[in-house]
Image 1 (cartoon, rainbow, N blue to C red):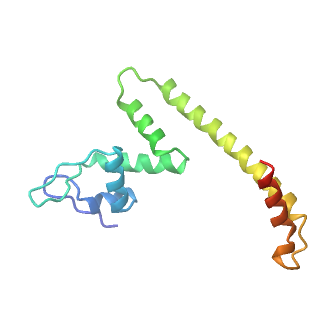
Image 2 (cartoon, one colour):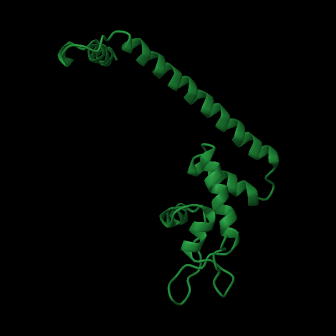
Amino acid sequence: MLRPMMTSTGTLTIGQLARRAGVGVETLRFYEREGLIAEPPRRRSGYRSYPEGAVRRVRFIREAKALGFSLREISEILALRVGPGATCDDVRSLKERKIADIDRRIEELTRMRDALTRLGGLCRGRGPTDDCPILDALEARGGSR
């Protein structure tokens, strides 16, 4: 496998960083705007010059997103990494909050699925939509709130 070449200063261009971290260039620009990665210095040519450590940080962000953390939560986690006095228990607390959030979402999605399943039982799948029991039930529910 060919390794992307670093610049002569030991830094990476935005394209090199994107390839190594497994994200798009626009994603990197977005992370910069959101403050998740520092805006790097620019060369005389105007190109961004990322330090090698940025690959690890972007991969971390990508993995945290894959676990369902929001960008705000990822920012909190990253701040704990460098925060004076921050402990592993602080990180554990964030993890526990995320699990509780996921459990709430699962309950909500289960209620939605169950409601849709009940509605689906009303429909034979034939006839015009102005006589559709699913649409009628949704309309009735919307008027009762």
